Length: 118
Image (cartoon, rainbow, N blue to C red; front, side, top):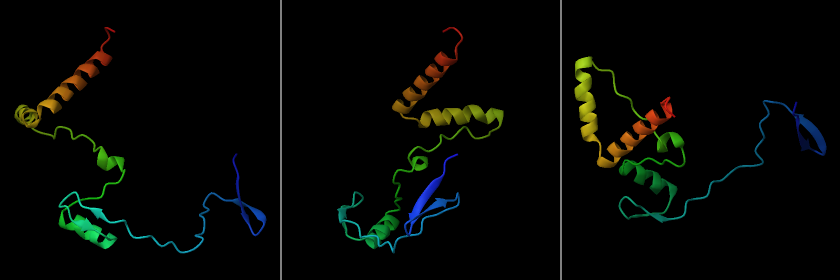
């Protein structure tokens, strides 16, 4: 079993599972570097202006959160059997040519790998 130790006042002390490190001092976050907005070309010079700019333009800061960058695909909502055909038709009609070709390729690959003929 692994054990962890820290050194405090020249002594080694075993770290328990619930241990959290005490901060060494206050952390002061510096202001951001000025940048030009991609939304309207204005110069953003501070964090407060950045937050206000996001709010005004209805933008969201994403960072590298994979749940935002790669949202889960939405399935076909529950519908009565007679409405299902029209629902699927409307979804296909709303697709671009590139999305449609990608969907066909995914389906062909899925069938290819699930087939017993290989």
